[in-house]
Amino acid sequence: MSKLKTETQNSKIELNAFLHTELEPIVPSPLDSQALAQGDGELKGLKLAIKDNILVKDWPATAGSKILEGFIAPYDATVIKKLKEAGATLIGKTNLDEFGMGSSTENSAFGPTKNPWDPKRVPGGSSGGSAAAVAADLCDASLGSDTGGSIRQPAAFCGITGLKPTYGSVSRYGLIALASSLDVIGPFARDAETVERVFAAMSGEDNKDQTTFNYTYKPVDADLSKLKVGLPKELWELEIDPEIKSAVRSVVDWLSSKGAKIIDVSLPSVVYALPAYYVILPAECSANLSRYDGIRYQRSVTKDSQKLIERYMDTRALFGSEVKRRILIGTFALSVGHYDAYYQTAVNVKDKITSDHERVFKEVDSPVRF
Image (cartoon, rainbow, N blue to C red; front, side, top):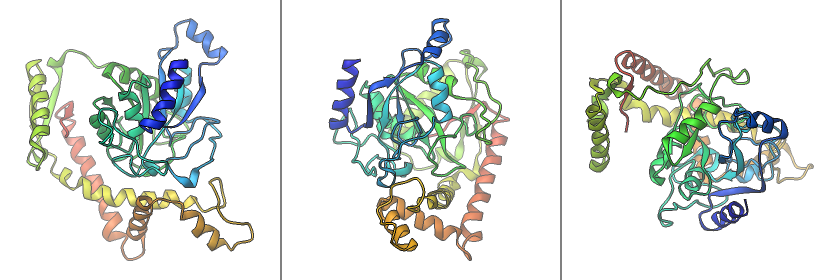
């Protein structure tokens, strides 16, 4: 454990992957230990780092923002409760773009995280701290959250495995909200097998999150000859870096060589996904972050004698520039006279994208995505 302490402390200085590390990491309780001794702890001994927008009781939870500096989580997120019960050892909280807004982990109020493979490069984001910690071998696995690529992209940048689960398969209870209709918690690890183990332990229905559904993870059949893989022609027609397109093509060819059936499919509405995302996310962000008003649970910088509007303005000045930008865009999209033209149109596009995918999933097991 002393080696772990030294590594995580050095990481905070060199990589800035961690915002908070525990000198005494959370290990299974005596009652949990009895269950673990009987072989019920599938994650026994696994060192796990947690993105700092997921609540761990009695640990700081900043979401990478000055506005939450000093806030201590009063309860465990559902995923944390499940992972503790599975025997995982929690070692600390990782850095992120403020409230999950960014793709480089340069938008954290506590400084950027560096890529462990090349400190001159970014680790991706917004879950860059979680990805960097795994890539640097500072933990066995970590948790991140994904709203628009925040697990998938840093996993690629850091050369590890990351899983963005299906929305509703993992509880969001205890996740500091960015865009509630898009936010998903998921795992990182250096190999797919560990990602699978962590996901199996953390997934499932939760009565504290009504968007979850009755789901029990089942390992995928290793016989790829039964697999149907879809190639959406609209994605292959996009301007994509030739090296990336070639790498994806090589994976498709490998699947085909193992017996998978490759089928051309169409997702005509997918080309509008990014524009819709850039309206829906800021709109939901604007609504979710309105709670930080200087009165309730986050840090306040004003005196009790100040006027309410002054307290509100001074406190929200603690938001970083990227957060402010998205709040402004979202507030505009939700405003009278613009709601139908922007937000409602984006929601309609999202519904169309959903229906297109439902149709494709009747034809194949999974479409290939870049």
